[in-house]
Length: 137
Image (cartoon, rainbow, N blue to C red; front, side):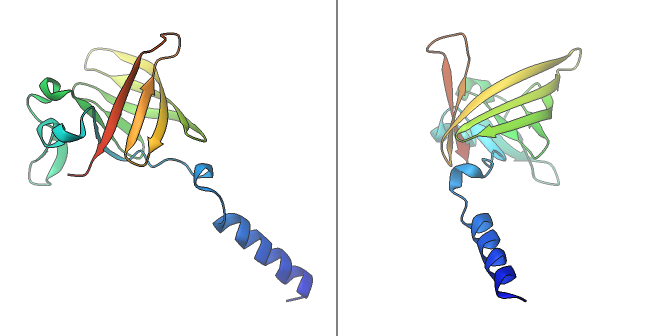
């Protein structure tokens, strides 16, 4: 390899692995509850496959959602992620949701506070925010 090519390869590798944390997409995958202390009351493992799902009375403890690679699940909704845009700490997701009798598109505006905390924002409604905490169960 010529010295010029070596230099370009080293620079390219450094650019890929030296990207700051905010340049990577935020890992949303997992269970998220409105209260970290209530995780075991909001979520449960059920069935032979030990699948993560919602407990019977999850809403009593604040509720939450389960994020998978291509969908978001609520207690009564199953939403397919149609698009996602990460812009630093801000995450904009558009999902198509089916609630059993109706299909609708919903837009989520999320802000990553840290690896285990996000805030759902409601543009146009000042002061309206909901914090979610990652559950490690």
